Amino acid sequence: MATRQMAQFGMAGKQAKIISDRELRGLLRLVRKGRYSARDKVMVLLSVKAGLRACEIAGLTWSMACDARRSVGAVLEVRDAIAKKRRGGTVPINVELRAALLALCKQMRPTPDEPIIRSERGRHMRPAAIVNWFSALYHRAELVGCSSHSGRRTFITKGARLVFKVGGSLRDVQQLAGHASIETTQRYIEGSTSAKCALVNLL
Image: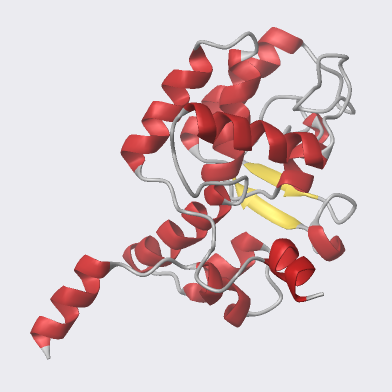
């Protein structure tokens, strides 16, 4: 029983590794060489720049990213139907992600109900397939300790570190993450060794 619980929830201290800016650039260079480069770039950015879970990436349709004019809009609408615990919300679309979505939309010319991330057969990819795709990508990039949750942890950690610069609070990060409580959001945030050293030296 204990072994199954550790496999399902992860052991303490074994959370997915966050991704540095340099590592993200390397990942984007890597997917650029693939057969589905436009789609794969969007997958990476949905994880790192929007903090989406595998089930949400798998369930997104173009209607959730487009405005009334059927162009990529300003926010992603993560509907309850695809969100964990049916707790949806909206996430403003990062400028780099929007450019990638526009490029993919131009290539696909989709209908509103079509999935943003399509399998080779043109259908929704399953969440498990998304998880496996990220696992294979991180293996190719030789990034040890990363998983499909790494992008989400990166999004939440960077948001928590930068939110004060725009006059926000951890509550804003919580809402972007779609968490029911700030305590859950705090568990995702990676500590900063350099920040802790600087803080201690101020005491």
